[in-house]
Structures are given as structure tokens and as C-alpha cells.
Amino acid sequence: MTATNPDAFGRLEGPAPVAAIARDLVRRGLIIAPVLIGLGAVGWQTEGAWSVAYGLALILINFAIAAYVLSAASRISFALMGAAALFGYLFRLAFIFAAVWLVKDASWVRLVPLGLTIIVSHLGLLFWEMRYVSSSLAHPGLKPTSPSIRHTANPHTNRNSSEGATPS
Image (tube, rainbow, N blue to C red; front, side, top):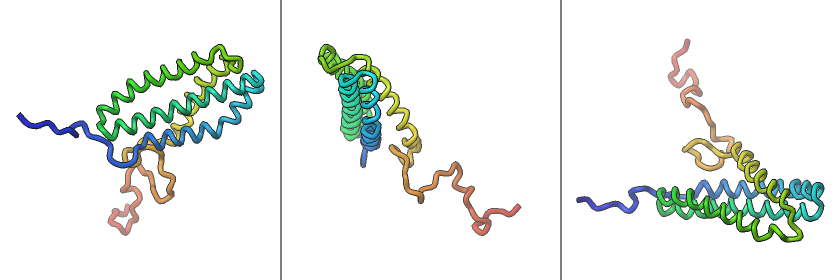
């Protein structure tokens, strides 16, 4: 019988792409926050503004917790990262539920703007971030912003005729 390798499932070495994506999501959430809080104030006065701000804080904290848990788990093993993704989602969903449940009867909360903020900002930020996430294993995480990095489908299409390409 052979000895088992503790790293048989692999683990992440180097920077965690999920952390960079979460930082970018939080940055974008902070960019859009004044607009959303203003819309909450227009629709539901002061209570609406506070509800929107609270909902945004919950979502941004949710993204940050997800990034931390996945980054920490990926440094141990990819199998643990999968479990952290599955069960972490359930715990973070419970966190949002508990956070809303605790303030649902508070005088400064309006449930409609709070609920709309949680749903729309969560999905909106994820869809906004999809434009900036790389789908390449060569650059996991956010797309590189350097102009020196070229993305071509076939690297051989950029040859000059002097480099050995046959003339037609």
C-alpha cells in the first residue's frame, strides 16, 4: 500500500484571484453607492436612504467574506475550497437573513428598498464585474490591463512574412 500525499488534491500557490475580484466588486459597489442611496432617499426619504446603505453594506461584506473564506481554503486544498464555496454560501445566506431579521422592525428601515437593494445590487455588481473577469487560465482573476499583453485566438497569425510564413 502506498502512502497518501497530503497535497493530492492540490492547493493554490501565489495570489488568490478571488481576492482581487472581491476587492474590485467592493470598489464598484462603493462607486455606485451614492447613486443608489440617493434613489432610496428620493423614493422613501431618510428611511429609504438608510435601508439602501444597510443593504449595500450587507452585500459588500458578503462579497468580502466569500473572498476571504475561498482564499483561505484554497491555500489548504482545492477540495476544501469546494466545500467552503458550497457551505460558505449557505452560511452567508443565513448571515444576510439574520441581518435583515434583526432590523426588520426598526424605525429607520423600509423593507422594500432594503430587499430591492440586496437583490438588485448583488446581481448588478456580479453582472458588472463579468466584463472585467478573465476567462483565461493564463490570467485568472481580473483581465490584465497592460497594453503589452495581447489576446489572440491563434498566436501564429501575428507573424511577419520574413519569419517563415509562406507567401501566397
